[in-house]
Amino acid sequence: MKKWLLVMVGCGVFFPPCAMAIPNAVLGAIRESASPLDGQDLTEPMIAAIRDGGTLPGNWREEGMIESARLTHLLARPHLFGEPVTLVRTLHREEKLESLEFTFADAGSYFGYFSSAEEVDKTLSRKEQQAWLNAKMAEKQQKFATEYERMLASLRAAIQPLVGKGRSKMIEVGKTRALRAELEEWKLPGYTLRLLADGNRLIRIVMLADQKPMRTWLDASLADQDMRARLSLLRQRVEKQTDGTVMLPTLRPIPQGYQPYCGLNTLAMAARHFGLHIDEDWLAVAGKFQNTGSAAGSDMLGLYQAVAAEAGLHLDRQSQLDISSVQRAIDQGMPVIVWRRFSQERNQVHDDFLREWKADPTVTLPNPAGEKERLSWPDAKAPLHASVIVGYHAARGEFLFLESWTGKDQARRMTAAEMAATTYYSFVFQP
Image 1 (cartoon, one colour):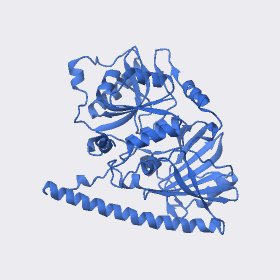
Image 2: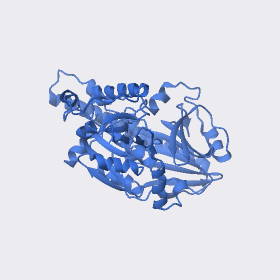
Image 3: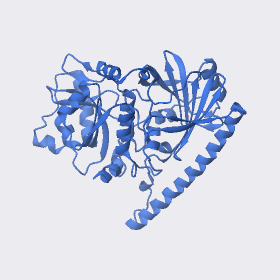
Image 4: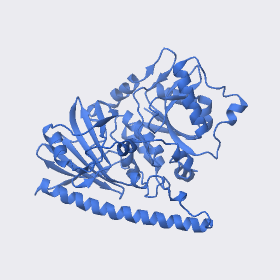
């Protein structure tokens, strides 16, 4: 049973309609936003910004908060250290730039959903089609591996003049074994430079302002707080509205893009809510994602347990959704992740209902007891997807949930009955 779950979750791993349901992403917005900085090497101005407090070039988009830290990403595709970047991200605290993060070789963006299945010659036998797909994937993997090694060598060569004879040291970040990252670190005048290259999936350079760099994924503002204080902060984020809705309004989506990452992005959303500076790209490395354009073979269940442990929490895995336990978790400030069956038709129903509800908060979803309504729910043959429950309305029998894609940053509503009937695995975080 567990192996089946690991293979299937990933939002479109074996079901292209789910992949096609995802309209846009962080990277999509960057690629679609032409910038005069595209292709320019911004190494010097970026170093000046982190070291001297200089002005950051370009246009930046807000990406949410982790505790008191504000995240943004650059709407451009420049070069850093002589190489093209996939994503440039900042972290500010009280308007002071605290870190810059440059993502280079990123297997998730490179492989995406493996789309060669759409190109295969349908006149070939099933065995011949699979052989052709295997050959195309092997070719793509070799190209990425070659580029990964070339880029890593190039970045090391570009870093060398900055560090001179300064010696690096290897450091570890993270307290749980599964999420622990090993980075190479150099102390330079006014800032610290870290290089992460792990798993033949990801190369990342992080520059930190001259301060004591953290050795944990936990936000610096929480470093000196005990677990009781942190749990109190989570409870304080629960919003009880006058109409009876109970929700977590500060939790925000992390856009998934065209990657088999719905299980990772929803987990990263929860991790940020718990104050962890963990993103979906590092989770893919830690979860042993293969360079195949799918989540098959990854250790997703272990990854979920590791994030809970990193946050100092417990995780209750349920093969059936327990409505009361979800409500109790929300009351304590804990989002609940569900792996569920997905359909475009129901997705549209929930989109339409949100628009109706915003115009008239008295409208209700169709009665889940109706036979016609239940027949419209996705069945066991439907694509699989991950979502985050962020609220509930007990009297109306509704759950509020978020998705891991752009344009869904306002929680939609689903009857608790439909959520329970279409969920095949739920993850309830607990103190």
